[in-house]
Length: 335
Image (cartoon, rainbow, N blue to C red; front, side, top):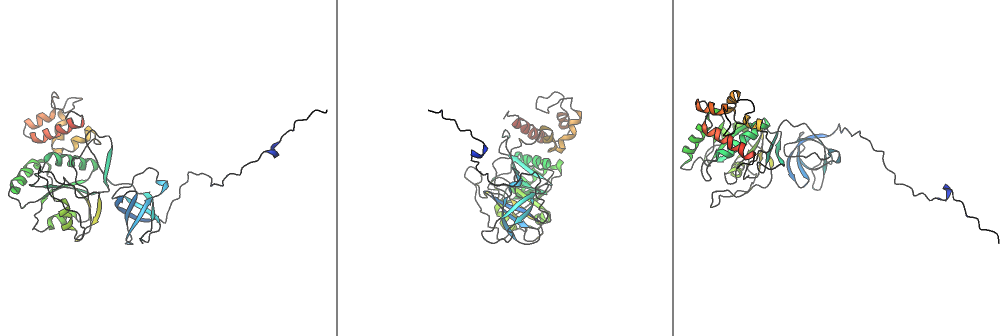
């Protein structure tokens, strides 16, 4: 019997599965030179409400893939392509985020490593405080001032409930406390005109921030009739109930400008602000650091600290120095 010869295979016997056609990968991104300009007025679960610069109205958009992991926040100047009709069910794409002129940030607490962008491109931070019920807290105001100076945003103190019995005394106390800062402040009565506040809001993108229950949403509804922001009260323990649930930019009715209403906050963390920048939030104290010894941390037990000498000479407030050192200790986890 003749031996069986083993068959020899070649490449013609191999079945090759055809690959799926694909475009060649490239690092060149489309320029989208014809994209429409606009800015973001609200963010909700991956959908962005935007206003077009050309007056085309409000549209809904999503982030384009080429943005990668870049976040889009209220106040961002953006470029849009796709369906810009604004019709129900239409969806445009955000293909570019323009460089931000300012970024206002905060953290939940002083030891929280995750910073949150409150709004981009703001011109002014309006710190809303009630003169009574609940009483104003200088510690919270100080924190907001530090965040404003760090972001290079103009601060404005807005004092609500100026009609209550103790309002005049509280206003005088705050005026004295911040006298060295020349902090601009305006008081509002529920039955009084808002012209002084509107003058300060004109031609600016302003952000309202404050504790819950201070009358922030009530103020927005007066400034922008039809805004329909939810209004809450103050609990029995003197803390406000949350009413606003997300930041939203609203056009002012009587003057050119935009107002960003933010949710009421329990605290304004400053973990994102460096120790050096923290002192810039206290410009009335900063001059004393020139006389500090090398490596001075400006803490309560710092030997020869120039800030103590500044207060001893009557050139700065002891209360302001104590507030600054409380923030230092809080950032270091000592409180």
